[in-house]
Amino acid sequence: MTIPAALDAADGNDHWRVFFASAVFTVFIGGLMVLATMSNEPFRFGIKEGFVLTTFSWVATAAFAAVPFIGVGLSYTDAFFESMSGLTTTGATVIEGLDHLPRGILLWRALLQGIGGLGIVVTAIIILPFLRVGGMQLFQAERPDRSEKVVPRAAELVTAAAAIYLALLLACTIAYTVFGMTLFDAVCHALTTVSTAGFSTHDQSFEFFASPSLEVVAIVFMILGALPFVVFIRMAHGDLKAPWKDAQVRGLLTFLGVVILLMAVWLSSSRNFSFIEALRLTAFNVTSIVTTTGFTNTDYTQWGTFAFGMFFLLKFVGGCSGSTAGAIKIYRLQVAGMLTRSYLLHLISPNRVVSLVYNGRRLPEDVPFSVIAFLAIYMATIGAFTVVLAAFGLDFVTALSAATSAISTIGPGLGEIVGPAGSYAGLPALAKWALCMAMLLGRLELFTVLVLFRPEFWR
Image (cartoon, rainbow, N blue to C red; front, side, top):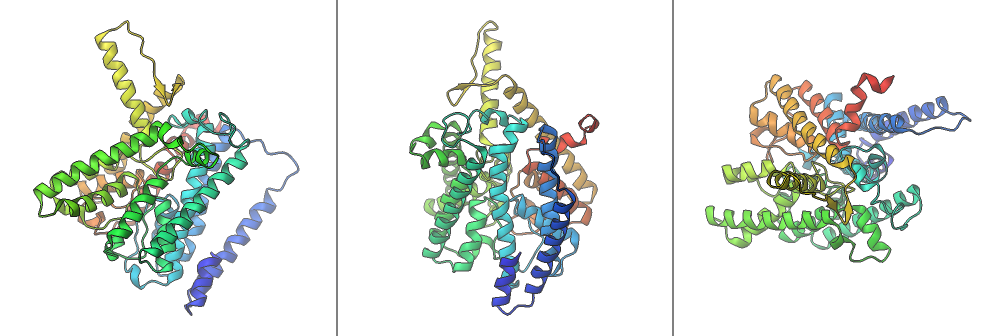
């Protein structure tokens, strides 16, 4: 909080006092918590503690990170929504008139997404495989500290991931600056690009810049943010072919290439766009939605019903496990495809033995069930939140797309209210709290939070 405070003070804006007061308040409460929990007894970290700490640390961080937003006139409901959206790298916003806000609050939004991006990478690499959430145990064997001894301990793995994250942020900032952004815009957009989060410093998002070269930079770093950071760690230790060995990376890049090409051909043939212009628009927006970033350079919902339906389906895909991206994730879709193929082969030949192999390793026995359970709960959760939002008076398209975007941590929904040209500011307060819960569920892979609602958990 002292970073945006210093920026506002340098700009001569009195809003620095809000950040400074928020910092003092946060340090005071944090200090009390430290003093209250000091003990000579060693802390035992088990599975239950993992679920509790993972969930409540994200909630507590969002609660305190919301305080500075109150200083720009937001209610605590809106402030918490903006904070949760930032930390979960969702990118849904209730703030309008971004171009006229103090630079400190714009930087704070970007910093929250930068923190959230690194936080989920660490959570996905270290915590979720340990908790065996939604098939993430598949990557417990993939961790470099367990398999290839690239780094020997979890702390070093976290340090390596953080170093790569900072390197990507620096490279993205430099690239944005070289191709025309101001240094401030470059820093803010680098934080929200690498974290695949989507907050911008302008109401028009990337449409404000009207620069194809900046869009190419954004596409590159959105994709890099959606790749497994374990792959980057392997590359840093000399395995330069690591991306092409990873089934997730191949799957994501192939999927993006095919969808972008098909959408570009369709857009150029059905609308008044040249193929190059159609390719530019589809490449940016498809990449933004699939990687769950949420940047826009045009209102793609105006392209017609085919594009409307296609972008809705793309909201479910997501990037790779161990990345900053959200949604279902490529590996779960690949495992589901393997299970479907296996089932069809069993229908044809009941006695056939079909081996399920992923990334050169046989799938652990509990992974298929975990993945199918995750997919079922994922769809059920979207359905439940759609009904809840509809009960608060939202139309069906707004309710369904807002629920999907929140759980997939994408940000912009569909329709006039929460679509690429809209915002979440006009939603009822209870709808915003419901979406905060949806964002938390989606960011922490559903089960990490849902398990806390089981009475057996607390016995």
